[in-house]
Structures are given as structure tokens and as C-alpha cells.
Image 1: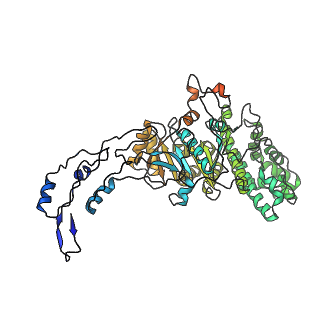
Image 2 (image 1 turned 90 degrees about the vertical axis):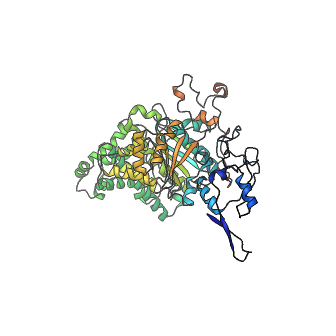
Image 3 (image 1 turned 45 degrees about the vertical axis):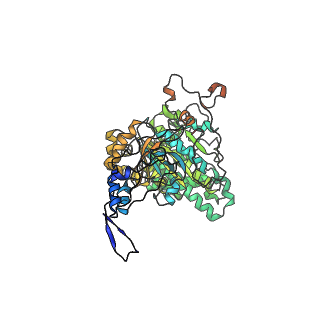
Length: 565
């Protein structure tokens, strides 16, 4: 109950004014023609004539309709805001009661417009680095969970495509199923395919831009960069050995580091770096010279060979096993790092088994991380890069060191100006990387804490229970995942750390729906591949216009979508 106070009447307070009810307030909004349904009453000041007139008013008027006018390309609103509506006055008691009914978008209107918030009706924008700068999240990493067919791939591809307009490039570090290849071909980019029938080879120990820049650095910078590269290579080789069932020791790591330093030429005075491959490392371990076994403090040649036999055999399997010829030869291709997106297509490796794919993901992860670090440090773009890690659980199943490698990349994302995007089906994927209670599982579960933004698409009730337990979801948020999100593709609960979840519907244009169609192979007449001629396509898959990533994006909120939205 509120009072009316007149400062000019000597401080005398007027009679109490009864606040209007909710039905009475709602009945005074305008109809679709901008005409008030009723006239706002004057507050009761004790005047008999006013009180009588107010008593004759109807208080049970019809509220605004559930749906307003529909227009192509637009949403609907119960109240047409385009027409000027009358202004109504209310007391603080009345406004305080109605204010909780209002809703607003929880993220700023900056970045790629991905869809709309179904609760507020407003457009939903995504820009992970801006979210970090504004204090909304603590890191820019994202993790995507969702059952097959719920729209994981289309959501990820739409995010990459629309972030291109803001100068953000992307790298798919291992496309296991070839789902991202149509996007690259539509942009006029040829993805690098590895596997059966492909001529491409990738040296897991490739120097990349490091070799070309070596002579431009002083001795201190050379030593710093080389130390980092050798540490990365040592972690990679020990992880690959662990994938073969052997757990390397600290002595093994010392031996590998020494061998790598000798092979690359660092022990010769840093004059020029030499390219090396995994077969060269295996040859040094199998038949060490006197300088090598003495430098690593072994008593004899035989003791060195006996101690390193297991790790030597483990690395030899990469040369003669199912991955022979893929990662043990010099790199024979060049990636266009100025392109808005690049991809490593591993779909041709599926016939070689899950372990072959896991090893390939590990090699690609190490190689791409090193190359992008050096490329970005050289000033080629100087911007943020999205690194998509599809089915990352495959890589982490190789062992503890593989899990630690992913953990390290996530922790360094802010310093390295990267947005790590992990794509998985369910939380139990992380629990399958090792035995129950093992260090691998413990680190893998902590990876979720290193991804501040969680995109949760439709899931079954059982998986919804797992997500609720791991991410601390409320009952209502869990119901969104197992109910509303299962009723259509592209529906997801976006959870930014401890903020309330947002019900987001991803919206695709007609062009995007054609390109992102992961079910094309199931249809009787599948869509022709993007590299065919326009006559062969018959207009079914129009290529996207090239994106000029060198231009400075407009600071104003822009809808970063493909043509046709």
C-alpha cells in the first residue's frame, strides 16, 4: 500500500491509495491497433466523483493476444512496438510487483549471431573472447555434448562460419567423419586428407616455420624456441609409446630428448636445424653410437639397448604398423594459414581401426599446436583461432600423457589466443579414458572445468542425469536437455559457468542447411559434392562467397551468417 504526498501542503499526508490489481494493470495495455483497451484510472485521492467513476470501470479486460502479426523473416510479438503506445503511470508498489515478469537476454549483442533465446525472444550472439574480457567467463574454451542427430556439427560449423566475419580463423584438428569437408569446399578450400588412397604425408616432427626463422633470431631466442619444441616432441613420442601399452620412464624421456636434440642439429652449435622423422629416432635408439649412450650415462652399449628396447619397439610400430607411411615421412603439403578455415580429414583412416585414428589425432594435435603457435607468433594474422577437437576422447584413451596434452592445451588457451572447442557425445566419454579412479579419469573430468561455456544439446534421461551431476545443473535445466532440446535439431541449453542456462535455438539459412547436411548420404539421391560443376550441382549446393578475413570487422553488432538468412 502506498501514500500520495504533496510537498506544498505543509507536509500533510493524503489518504492511503489502494494499489491496482494485476488484472487491472494488464487490462490497460493497448490492442494491436495501438488503442488502449481502457482508460488509466486516476489514483484515488478521496474525491467522491473520481471514486464513483473508478468504481464503474471494468477490471477484467482481455489481455494481449498470445500471438501477434506474422511477417516473413520476422518473429511475432503480442504488442506491436512499431506503433507509439500511450504512457501509463504506476506507483512503486505496482511496478515492483510486475517487474519480475520481464525477461532479457543474458549475453551482450556482440559477435556471431547464432540464433535466438527462446525465453526472451532476443537474438543470441556468441563471442567467447569477449565473454572473457567482460568477466562473464574465466576462459574462452567450449565443450559440446549431444546425441547423434541433435545438431552438434551444424552448431559448431555455423559458429565457425559466422566468426570468420570477425577475423577469427578455425582449424579442425582431425575431422574423424569428414563432416566439415563440405564447408571447406564451399569456401573454395581443399582440406588435407590423410589415409587410404591419399598422397598426403604429415611428419609428426615437422619443424614448420621454425626452420625458416631460425637465422633471424639471436642465440637466446633460438635456445628458448628449441627447448619448447623438443619438450613438445618428447611428450608426443612418449604418448605414442604409451598408446602401444608401454609406460615410459623419466630415463626414456631423457634419452628421447637427447636423441631429438642431436638429430635436429642443436648439438652442432645451432647453425642450422635439420628436419627429422620418427624412423630416424627409431634408428638412433636401436643402434646408438658411443657418444649417445655415454651422454645419457649408460654403462655400455648393451645396457642402453636393453633399457630402451620397449620404447624402441613401441615407436617402431608407427613405422611398420597400421599408420606406416602417414607420419613417418617428410610433410609434402603446405597449408594456407591465411585461409579462414583449415581441416585435416581423417575419414579415410576408419578402416585402420580406432587406435589408428587415436594416434593420428595425437600427432595432429601436437603438430597443429606447434605450427599455429609459430605462425601466429610471426604476425601472419595476430588474431584468435578456433581449434575444433572432434571426438577428443579417442585421443585421450591412449593414456595419461595424451590426457595431459589436452589438459595443457586447454589451460594455455588464453595465453595462446585460442578457443579450444571439444565435441563429445556424453560425459561418460571422459570416464572411459582409463580405469576407474585412475589419474587419467581424474584429469579428464577436470577438463570440464577448463571449458567455461557448455553447449548441451538433446540427450536421453540417463545421460541427462550424468550431465546434471557433472555440471551441477538444476532440475529445470536438466528437463530442458531431456525434453525441449529433444524436440528439434539445433536446440541447446547454453550454460556459461554458474550462470542460469539459456534455451537457445540455432537458426540456419537455406544455404547452410544444404552444406551442413550430415544425413545426405542416407538419402536416395544424395547431394553432389561441392567440387562438381554448377551444371552438375543443378543449384542444390551453392558455394559460399569467400570471406575477406584481412578486413577490419565493424564494431557494431552484426549478424555473421551465410547469405539467405
